[in-house]
Length: 453
Image (cartoon, rainbow, N blue to C red; front, side, top):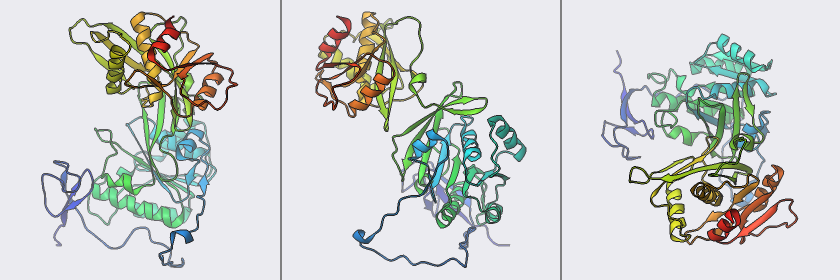
């Protein structure tokens, strides 16, 4: 009987070690080295056809390299296409991660049922009847969508050779296993090897591959970190399972921007695309309330109107509390210090709570002035006119600083029916003929006088 071969891998970065050590020498993480059974073989599961022309790459001068535009496949899902940069690039590998039950499988099945190309949907977690029930609920019927329940990569590639799909969906990468490695599915070596085979298949056949990845308790995609380096696109599906809204973010994209955002609403019939995100980010209320302000922010090239809520009250426990939801706590502390030092508002002995509605996280400095307005509104207990919005950054000297793409923010505010936009007087505004009143200020005192005069 042959001796069992084992080796040691780092669960964080996937580095192989000859023996167990407490700290990984590559990523410097502690207690991440695990022993796995492995059997290395030179052969690969996916092999290029022997009739295919073999090419030998030669070095070229950078001036002699010809650029070929990437061929993209439109998924008929506008939010996903926006995040991807225009659609699926042929030969690309996309990894989608998210919390259990957030809707990853629903999103990709919905894409597979609505895309025009021939799709092979491989599931290692659900049976064909379960997927059929979900497809019936989604009310979509695509005769070009083939469903396969299999976890063995040898069998998967045999079915691929027979069906020749134009798009491949794997649900999920952690359930696959190859016979080349004697390790359990979901282990680091299995994830790395099966992902390498799928990437090799995608590049040689120009077939886009969509992978679903589980996440661990820290919120990162399970498996070796090298998996995220191997793929072309990494998408994160976020949201609260107790709420209906989902956010699709791009963490890595070799073919487009990583600052794009897609928003969906989870319904019984699937995920509904939300073309106007401001409808969910601004709450509906019957009366004007103090402590709320509307900010104009940008996510990629998409302008959004979001609602900032603040609550300022006397600290009853002695030590003032500072709490934020969807906003950087350190930046809130900086703004409070500016208000006390430069504008003379005594907030050091008061509790301050800040919330961005809709469950999204925003790091755009252009919402600083809206944060200031919401805090001062709650402190003075005076409501801000609901037709007023803000787009400006606040500096440490108390000055109102200009922000980028101010014209796009103005057009979005005008389109949504706002009458006044407060911005920095140092902004260079291309057009003066806007249908919205522009209030340009240079200091916090001017903004306060304009709002609460």
